Image (cartoon, rainbow, N blue to C red; front, side, top):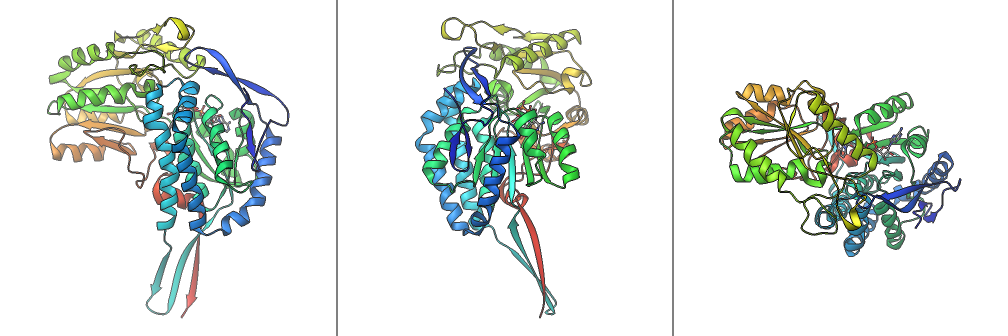
Length: 479
Ligand code: NAD
């Protein structure tokens, strides 16, 4: 089966007719091919987007909103097909794709179809002599580039506000998980998007992605992915004065105080460590536990982690599916080796898992818990982005905060305590764009989302995203 580009309203093969293999992580077998697009395909998409822009920007917000809502409805109507595609492409459990990824992608389009209707302009009186008003004008053709871990969820999180704001989009999903974006392009045709408004060019970062970020007619780049890639994109975008939003890597701390609601903490910490095989940028990968309950935590957590079922993503009873690619699978195993060399003790996991039958060649890793490492070692500094967590005791609140802040990242964190003052105090001192107290992964889409330090630049979500895809224009009138 061949995945096709979506350019100027039509599905088409890459102009160079070059293709990349797309394997299924659970079986290790190639099951489809994706376009290995290059700058010619990107140029075709940008030309189409430029031509479509004036009419798209001139539509009323209500008309754009209607189309986004229609797309959202179509995603829900095709939930089973999209979830199966997402699970097959990514290796995640099918139940997770059905329950989280695809409903959330539909919600992203629905949310921005509503948000754009609520978005208002501002006016400022200057003592009755002058009036200033500010309008927001869509910036033009923009690019949205997304990673493989939550494929349609993160892709739609960028594309939806861009389209709602009146921009035309040239987008690229990760070449590792292209299938759900391909299915989305079919739904866009069904929804009746005007040709050129939304284009999807498949291919690698260094080829198709690079052509997008360097294209002079692309006015803004919304990127989610690794910090290294983000730094590279920033270096290319800055001299061309493109607007830039970067959502990057993380090394999130999960701080557990002795007075927490133990059962709730334990249940959530299992999820926040290993959901989606630990491949969520918001997963907690460094668990910090107050010394008075460290031994109790260590024993109970290791036991529960060991019992997590890893297996065929089709099986509704598995908690963890396959790692997304062979390359990433090997990287995670090498990180575990490094942790051992650094003096870490593997409490559970630490190994690849060989399944039988359909998944015997798949890429599976046992959920892994490591102790005995200080916060300065590479294992605690570098993003692993897999089912591997470290645990470490702390003695004081200050020490916990220092450990939490000891990396260059600052994406997210979580905190467990029943002491309300401590909760607020610590939450405000942890350097992260989002901090969950006694919960995890709850998102109000109206809030600004993004990371501090090397976890990103800019904020997505709500009106922040609509603003990002527009230019503010001030008019000052003498009264
Ligand atoms: P990646 O940086 O390798 O790739 C991300 C996307 O960028 C892909 O579509 C890729 O093709 C493209 N790309 C790569 N090189 C490019 C280039 N030179 N020019 C243009 N595009 C290029 O990241 P990944 O491995 O796909 O994703 C994992 C990373 O994403 C992790 O670091 C994770 O923390 C991060 N992430 C962050 C968030 C967040 O919200 N902050 C969310 C999810 C994932």
